[in-house]
Amino acid sequence: MKLSQILKPEAIKVINSASSKKRLLHDVGELAHSAFQLNQSRVVEALQERESLGPTGVGHGVALPHARLDGLDSVQGGFIMLEKPVDFDAVDRQPVDLVFALFAPQDAGVEHLKALALVSRSLRDQGLCKKLRANPDPSTLYAILTSDQNVAAA
Image 1: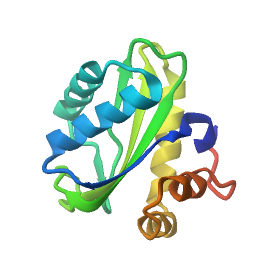
Image 2 (image 1 turned 90 degrees about the vertical axis):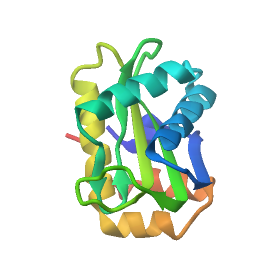
Image 3 (image 1 turned 30 degrees about the horizontal axis):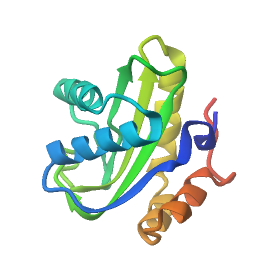
Image 4 (image 1 turned 180 degrees about the horizontal axis):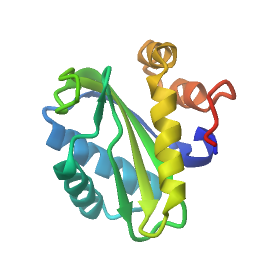
């Protein structure tokens, strides 16, 4: 699996700022609606349910919110870069500015886990994150995220 299989150019957005984690999850819901025609309020609700189990802010300014949803045939991803980081209850207590959201079918099983592992591995690469932060243009962000140099999931 490669990021290019779960991410499409129209699922990338640069946002000046989000006032809170809750607002950021609404932004993710808007992105899921515009890119994948998913029900925005259902996406936000599912993301909030997942967050209630434990925050998906994984550290170093990165968050990986994810949810299982009806209406999908395959795992899809959306990426948001914030120009001004927001508190996301991350494990390292650092604010988040890179958000890669995953949306999986209800019965995705192992594909959801493979996608989550791939995104997690990719965004643990500090060199990649530095490149992303230096290029606040959606088409450039897409090119960086989907370049062949990224590690493929097992």
